[in-house]
Length: 185
Image (cartoon, rainbow, N blue to C red):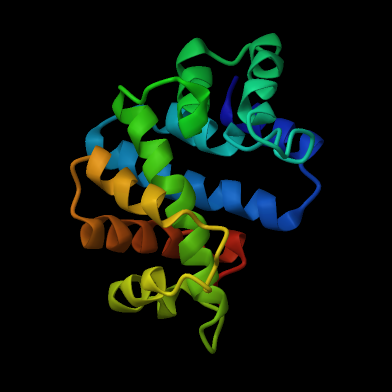
């Protein structure tokens, strides 16, 4: 599977523009980390794009991503990517071992949270989001309440990253693709 086919799969199964943009935001962060670590950028992008492809058809745990994984296997998605997607769900029983797996987990909830932070800025732009304000919003349990704060914190820790550095890195990655994410203001 290449990036184009991964995006076609997303568009086939995901009707929500918001969910599609979430997967694109996670892709932006993952592709940037792949470049930083000298990893296969397309593989990391495909993993990010496909990680929630089955959310609309399997919106309940543990169905997502467990029931989606065989669908990806049928489409020729590699075991490495499927394993990473399974490992992004704490309840899957698949431990995160590789850098790809840890990065997907670390970027997933944070990308969603950064999007929410951008939406409440006057210009609705990721360029307006600062690490300090993200940290403050993380403490506000009413803000973006669906985002698991423990996953944001633990994701950075599993990658061996300082949380502020991880947040700043992902903001910059999302800025590079702000227009396609609907976050250019």
